[in-house]
Structure formats: C-alpha cells, structure tokens
Image (cartoon, rainbow, N blue to C red; front, side, top):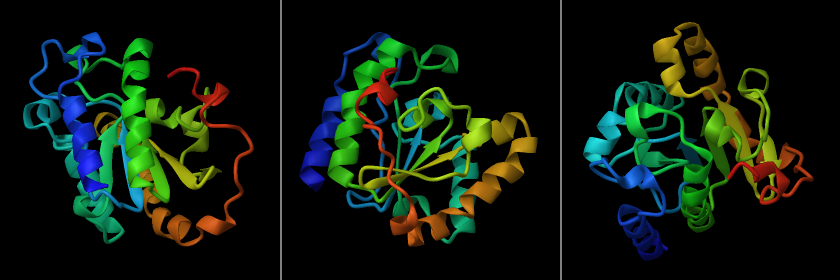
Length: 201
C-alpha cells in the first residue's frame, strides 16, 4: 500500500491535466501515514505549500497543528491533503475544471488510505459529502457515507482572517475524538457520494 501511494504521489507531481501546474514550484500531493484513521482535506496549496511541496505549512497549518495538539494528535498521526494539488494563482478558489481534474487523485488517496473519518476543511472539500450546503449551518455535524464518516469544519485560514471563527473551529476539533469513538452510532447516508452529490467535481 505504501508503494502504491508513493506511485500515486509521483503521478501527482508530474500532473499536467489542468493549467494549475503552470507557474507553480511544486505539486503538493499530501502527507501522513498510509493507514491513517483520520484524513484532513483542505482546499488548495498556498505560497508556502507550493515552495515546500507539503500541505498546511503556513499560518493556517500552524493553527491546524495547534488544533491537533488540543486533541492529543500531531500531523504525523493523520493524513493531510487538498482537493487540488497545485497552488491556484494568487490563492484564488479552485475552478470546476481543476477540481474535476484532481478528483481521481483524491479518490485514489481515500481508496488506498481507507480512513475511518474524513475531516473536510472549508467549503470546497465539504462538497465531497454535502453538495450545496452552507458550512455555517453544518459545521461540526458528522455524516456517514459508505464506510467513512465525514466531519465538516471551517478552514483554519478562516480564523486568521476573521477571529470570530477561531472558537467555532476549536470547539469542532474537540468533538473529533468522541465522533471517532462512536462511528458505529452515526447513521449512514442513503445517497451515493459518487453520483449527484459530487456533480461539481
């Protein structure tokens, strides 16, 4: 499994399926244990991530690390990636064609890692399980799709731009251990996550 994941990440490093690779320094496949129980999925690499080829290493990443520490985890315990693997120009939102181009890579990462829980950070990754929802309404509420429990959170960067989100993010993070301990109590979603829900991708 480790070899397959590394081969996938090498494909991501060489990817030219959309225009995002132009003008970037590195692709950012993601990192973490190949058998992580928890997978964090953000939006896209930023400046520091593009420079280092690592996810969440800037200010938002530092906040994420402090959030993980608050539940006795470190970034080495979880797998961290983004819905797109190259930095969009000027940190703009990923576009639909870019999301679609990168989606097979993300699907394969999930398939190989088999996380018990996916924590979505921000609205673009939230669309993996909640199409068209408002993150302000659903954050911190788990939902089971197939064998995986999805848990939506605001992106850590939101707290950097609007401090009022910090306490919400901190409170949601502290729910994760309990959710992880009670996965079997969460009702499975009837809808097929590969069908209409994910039409954006």
